[in-house]
Image 1 (cartoon, rainbow, N blue to C red):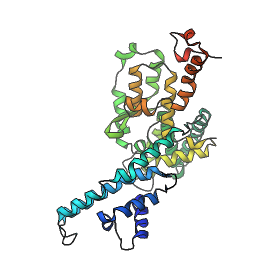
Image 2 (cartoon, helix red, strand yellow; image 1 turned 30 degrees about the vertical axis):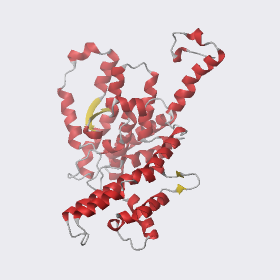
Image 3 (cartoon, rainbow, N blue to C red; image 1 turned 90 degrees about the vertical axis):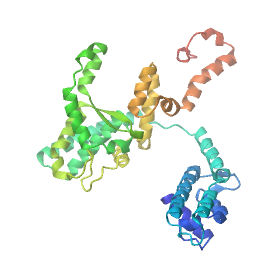
Image 4 (cartoon, rainbow, N blue to C red; image 1 turned 180 degrees about the vertical axis):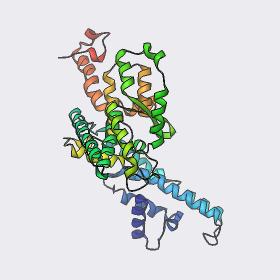
Length: 369
């Protein structure tokens, strides 16, 4: 809506007769629609590029959706456009976006690609993640002690937020999906775990993995495109979650169905804002990198250190809520790191003429020092 609002404001500057989006969507306005879009997307005529190419790309979809809505209204209310027939109106509205790619989308897509080429990959520092985790544990423990002594809403809110952030930090899930985890989903997972028996699988996993099976609890929430996405909860997180359930009736309405529900409404908490808040409070040096997307990329990137087979990678991709193809394309070691650290070895050996000395070795086994 903000994108459309900025566009409409610019259109009114170019043509004072325009009042609504409906009055914009006409073939005779195509040139000023293109002009307004370029202005809002900050098009530089001299450089022939956009400063905000993502806006130009996204707005193409928005304007097409507006045309589809207008066509629907034209067919539903034949008199909406005066004496013009609904068929003519539909044809006119389709004409508005017919040549959009030639004027906007193609150049914007090129600008977007060029900006990505030399973008520095920013991932969280290990020290910052450790600092945040310790801060969350401290704040959570303080909130539990306060709630036991004197139940108060601010302490309940702090405990809920720390539990949420610790789950994000441990599982690297999308904040929007986790914040909408239903209360009954968590409660049902408790009964399901208690009834499960893994004795017949104990020989298939190591003693360490057996201990982890007992230490962690698995909850499956709704992920992207309706996929079931697992979330692992450690013993400490489970204990704090039980405290949340114990005092929930005092602060959250029974009509709020979310596990991480707001104390003042029926909606869930705003996950990314909560994570941003605690990332700043803990004193992290690079708190801007502690966001869900960077944390997810951090997990997938570091997974390349281990010798994971195809099945392991598929399980990791499923856990993160995407496909193996997406994992390899978007979440693996960044191109700037791989090409600088790995491919440079091959180029140097070729330049020195000593490539044959390392025949049969992997890139990780080649040491030039």
